[in-house]
Length: 440
Image 1 (cartoon, rainbow, N blue to C red):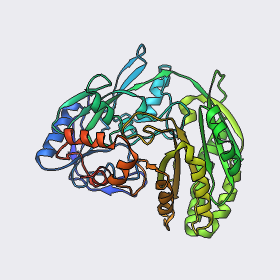
Image 2: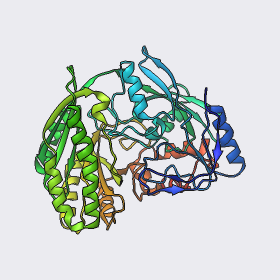
Image 3: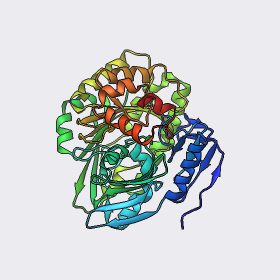
Image 4: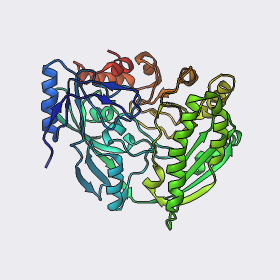
């Protein structure tokens, strides 16, 4: 039985702690019908409506201000698995970690995913969450159909053949078109991934980049600022057998060292910035060569407990080596002390209007700061570099771009804003962030 809708007032804060709001009401509808009533009630009162998932965006994209905040945590049902069509339909509030496990139990898997799995399915897709892949794109690119409640309370079913324009926009809709209630993902038979993690010099990675991204299904790497060292990761499908990391080794390296010890190192670096280059040198040498084979989602994802803020830009794939060399030079001539490694991932072009990979093969460059660390111009300098190369900011990660800039780097930006004018002319689903990135 779905849970009854509840409405209270409480402060909302995101995972990183850098965004918060005190909405007038918070509701947790258990059905699409209850959701529609909440939306209409708020609209009648002249209030805006925003849905929020797990709060893993660093921007204020989900902030309701003093409007109505919708929590989808009562919308978590699995509506059906169609093995013939190769799809699964789930409600919008289902967390990715539960989706991964229920699919595994059915012998199924998503084709690609990001490196964490705590987000809700609607939150992850609506902000453009992605992993890395030679042939496979973001979570939103794997959507085959969806269900959404619009500002007038109507429930729309969307697919390439049913309400196709709304489908095209709402797959990655920033929460600007309505509130998604269910998503249908394409899935495939479960598969194993073999991971090979290997330290490599910065220059070697860039010299071999074309080959590394062409030969491997999923390639990514981390560069440690203040060093010339990288940690690379290659994930490829395997016929097996499974060879997971021993449980103690997995805990030691992926939890204790990557979270507990790293948290302590970041705290030291925040208090004593001069120690950061030495910490970076030590950390870069702690990542050793290792290989293992396991169920796909266990290889794609890992726990992330150290809190930070993040900026990520997608640049044209052909420009990534040049951009990274410029970034390294920028860091070397600055006074910045950067404790977090720079993360680099890849994605093929897709056809989603607001996808950061829309119409072009892309490389993602992500920079981070430990929570509470003063920026001192790092994010500003990185953003200037990325925008000089027609970079597109991740919708859920920190940036300062506005609608004028974004209209110039997204070929279908006008299509999306025109659709928004049709389905939400009163901006029931608007907030300050959307006014900046989409225009008034």
